[in-house]
Amino acid sequence: MLKQVQEFINQWVWNVDLHTLPTWRAKLTRFLRTIYAVFRDLTQGQLSLQAMSLVYTTLLSLVPLLAVSFSVLKGFGVHNQIEPLLLNFLEPMGDKGVEITSQIIGFVENVKAGVLGSLGMGLLIYTVISLIHKIETVFNYTWHVEHPRPFAQRFSDYLSVILIGPVLLFSAIGSTASFMSTAFVQKLVAIKPLGMLVESTATLVPYFFIIGAFTFVYIFVPNTRVRFRSALLGAVLAGFLWQTIGWGFAAFIVSSTQYAAIYSGFAILIMFMIWLYLAWLILLVGSSIAFYHQHPEYLSARQLHISNRLRERLALLSMYVITQSHFKGEESWTRERLSQYLGVPTETVKNVLMVLEENGLLIMAGKETQVYVPARAPETISIKEILSLVRMAEEEEYFNEKMLPTEKRLEQLIDDIDAAVDQVLKGISLKELVIQDSTCSKIG
Image (cartoon, rainbow, N blue to C red; front, side, top):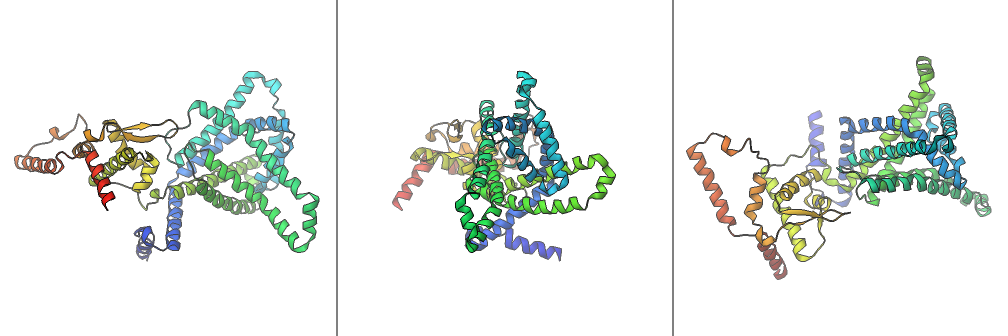
């Protein structure tokens, strides 16, 4: 039975070409692949480990973060909005959420910049920046980004979020509340059909704020370009999970009186840590959904292993399209764009491009956006050279073909194969291939 189910899933989800399917089935298949990929990430434990590390960092940095935000918001007169926001975040914890909120607000109010001094204030800001840097590192892992922001950019971007972000958020909340209390809105509420619509809209406003906040996090935090559509999709699904799991956690809190009896005063801390873990896990799941939506080439039922033949083909295709764009003056190729064009994960493309780059066939150009261009004139790069570099890429000095035993007949056969390849590729340069293809396209 299990084998039949697996065969059915392979036939209808994995062993199909999305381009040949109707639009509705292609979208459904991609959605099922995304669910499988996210579930696979959860079962492998990486998302859970990342969420747990963020819980630890949050416990250390929560009070400093709120203290800095409190200081900024106090200057704009909206600092009283922090407590309702915390109450809303900890609402699934019931009465314990109210208790934790009052304790956190008490800690924040006890933090005085004048008492801390310049050194203490510097350490406070450093703690907050370290929290955001940790969050960026986790999101970069989800998005397969190898390098974090440069230090100068990190400092400016983080401070702008810390100082301006809370002001914009609470100003939007305050403006919405003020708008809902205006005489015009109250008159609309008095009209029965419109009143129900306005009340329903007011009920949905917190959901819109959650989705908006998640979308901003998914776009801003990873050190890569995230499409708005992908970020919004991840935010909508994460917001749905947030509310659903919040209701489930609230029911769990109501029936957890035995935990209070066992853990006594530690029960509230344990519940708070569990909710923090679930909150970060939901946020990371939404980020993972956004990633797979933007990079469907990572949607695979198994880890991708490519053969030597495919590696050679990837190298030739990469050199061809990069040289063709350079020759025609078209848009240069980034690693991400090339990965989407080839339909393979970025890591696979990166390994092939690294071989070509290390051997002087490609160079990376650009500061903000890294693109690939030919490192030499295309007429000096032969097809035979590209194939030879890819074939010998993983050979080491301490172990190569000279270290293997030799058989005369076999060596002769290998030499004949190499000679045949040389004969076919003799004198064919990359430029000739690109020009010939462009000429054929114009004739066609």
